[in-house]
Image (cartoon, rainbow over all chains, first blue to last red; front, side, top):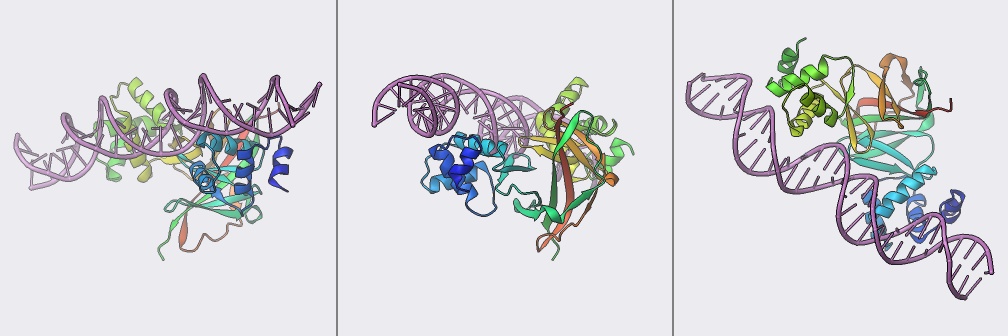
Length: 133
Length: 133
DNA sequence: GCGCTAGATTAAATTTATTCTAATCTATTG
DNA sequence: CAATAGATTAGAATAAATTTAATCTAGCGC
């Protein structure tokens, strides 16, 4: 689906900057990107957009399911263009994030959530570091 | 083991503030605490200690395995006094973290880590929100 | 097409979490 | 008990993210 249609379907007004950012984000392959990185890319691509808008846009896209947020380190948020069910390898040395397709991992023995709450998502982060090889 | 012995065993000089903080942290039950919260508690308990030392101490304790760090939200770090194998429920509405004993959850189908890396830990965060009840 | 308006964008200031710095203090060693 | 390596400190600095108040613009009715 085109970026324009996806924005409309999500109820987001297709403004110049949202359209441009949607194209940057959604038309490449699966990526993990920070707000600062996206801002840099946008400027590099000639899109004039403020950092505040980057943050607004990333959060709005996340709310409507166009992106997913991955929290792995204090003080940095990654936004994941892969919204399918999946999990992550995270290398603490390089800060790199790598997808693990959802069907590979199976969690069993999931206990009932605390009273009065329901499960929204299960995030699995496999933390790795450079090995002894 | 006493706080003093645990510090010595970890190779950390048992200074007044480290000892006091170790007692606060390790002698209660399992807890999830932020740097700011611990600072508040320390001051409340009459321990004169700066925020910088709180951060230093939390990180040192984490390095030597006296604590574990749980990253669930950008811009906030929780330190977990439970260092046993376990996972977490995280309620996004309240910011509350709750332990899930490790033996409850079983992950299968774990793929091989990226070439040249080895697994250090598997973190599972079950994100919940207040239910419809 | 034209203007109106709700919603979007902006630069700049602010907040919040954390780290750094350089000076002072203290636990350990001899 | 003096020397010193390491710890602590207040305060400044940094960084990510959010807020603010002013300006802009997409989409609507005409």
